[in-house]
Image (cartoon, rainbow, N blue to C red; front, side, top):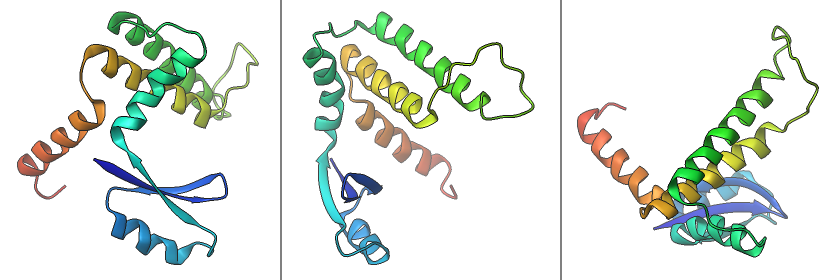
Length: 136
């Protein structure tokens, strides 16, 4: 399955599941915007490839799940840190987009090491949900 990402320079402007939707969205962007097709399997493999190229060991499912939990905590911390009514006991600055990317990265590594495609599972779940909840 393919995702069609729309970029202007290095900035991602959107991602679409149909090429015609990506082309339609191009009308609202500058003429220098471009569509980059991304094979979903490549997206999943890139998370594992990133670990290997950094000299790391691909985590087994249990370790990947623990790393995922840790990253999810860092994402929650980054979000809470933006709220003035929350008292913080540390001053570590975290980026919400960076932490969200880490969560996705580790979730992809978890699914890969567990032997299933997260993206295929997501689309299968969406198809089942559409049958159960047609109005959503």
